[in-house]
Length: 167
Image (cartoon, rainbow, N blue to C red):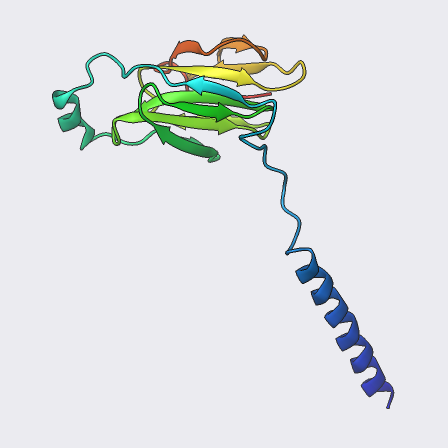
């Protein structure tokens, strides 16, 4: 009798937990900044880099798409298009030779990110909040530049950059 009562209590508690889980729409997720929030900054992508044309398309077959480790949210856009750089985010743009457009990286979580296949000119927009300092590092871990939030898109040559710390 005691084991039946224990089983009944366990099943009841499990039912209540499941009901609460489904009533809230599932487990809680981390907040993601909204692209249409009041603090999002609309940014226009720069023109295509010099030398992008039919010859560059032939080289693109052997090229690799730029990436980061750990991975962050990205999106692609043609030259002259716009995207929203959310508040609290360091946004970077690098040319993706595999798609012949700009690849935007959204660095939101504080971390050091290691870059692969980031080549040539691009830019960044530091739409972070507070008094945080961001860093670009070279191959030996040397600081190439440091900067604080604010301002317009800043042109930058990604060739010497091996990692980014957004905080």
